[in-house]
Image 1 (cartoon, rainbow, N blue to C red):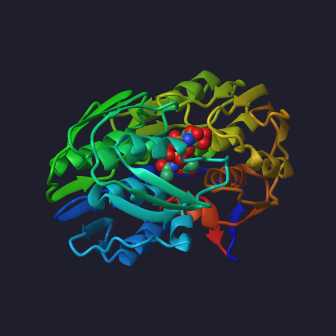
Image 2 (cartoon, protein in one colour):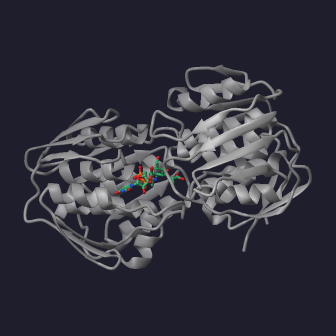
Image 3 (cartoon, rainbow, N blue to C red):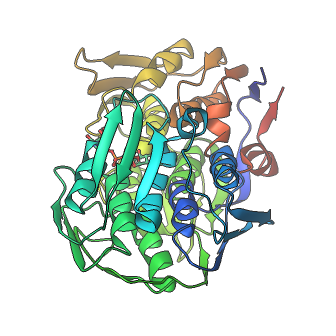
Length: 417
Ligand code: EPU
């Protein structure tokens, strides 16, 4: 099995360009099949989650071409057959085919999605939304048939502002008869990106990016060109690296507004940044103060940055804390960080942890527990003394585009072995 090998301690200098957002593109690709003509999506990152979605499109007989970050999808000859268990389980975002195929054909047959094991991750809110639009759900074990004679708009209140449920309901409602209102909708930038894509095709969606989204059903969706927004979690990951081991490190092609919570917390700890329109420069590292992090839905502190941030906390002087409110099992990577010298205490309820710093980290053989956990170990390896070998790197490669090249270009000693 390939591993990532890192020789720690090398300063990062230069520019890191940010790629298209994973959590946006993984929704945009299934969304494309709702279009009645060909669509083009640009700024598509090269990550294995995109490969897995491409395999589902091929399975459904859609035509897809991928060149230089551009993807063209034509779904005119799509066959609405069952998405196999293997394909469904490859990634979390396979669940977007539920909303997309239901919206296009009034029927979908597939299995419970896969994804990182960071909590139970049920899909009850997605299913509740489909039912309120008129669908009937037959669930046998992890196999789902969701079908409707006709989808009809409705008022849908989400008990929790789930990203996946909000997008999935939008996909199912976009061609439904009449008006759908989603209340307590998630407001992540990726949701607005998907709504813009659909509106570019002729959909009528208002309010995406706020907690109330209104969708007026349309009959036909036409060809369009659409760009994936920059990946705020990738940008945040590199910003944290910059704060730890950067020297005039610029993160560019990003949207600083999407990272307000992270920027506020880094600033509170004493990180100095020059914030431009589409870039952030970190001049150097400093003596950092301890801080408290609480993960929340957008625009709160992103759970997807919590694990990478934990590495930063090991380098703050004093006691920092993390409260994880979105997932039940997102501290596994802290146990790996301990192997590298971090001083970590996880509360028995698994929702709170404290980190005491500043502790020097040393290289070790560690295991990627999930995508962002893997990224946190990579950051730890960059600042650690000696060699770090990270196992299970497929997690990291599913979400970070050209990560080895980007880091090598700014001076890191990192390779896949
Ligand atoms: N939830 C339910 N029922 C549902 C849906 C969600 O109880 O029907 C709960 C989940 O169990 C979780 C919380 O609500 O505790 C948040 O889940 P949400 O639906 O918002 O997350 P998701 O759609 O499964 C997406 C991203 C995640 C990211 C979250 C939160 C994709 C493919 N995944 O997941 O990304 O953490 O939103 O921002 O877009 C990652 O990139 O590492 C990652 C895990």
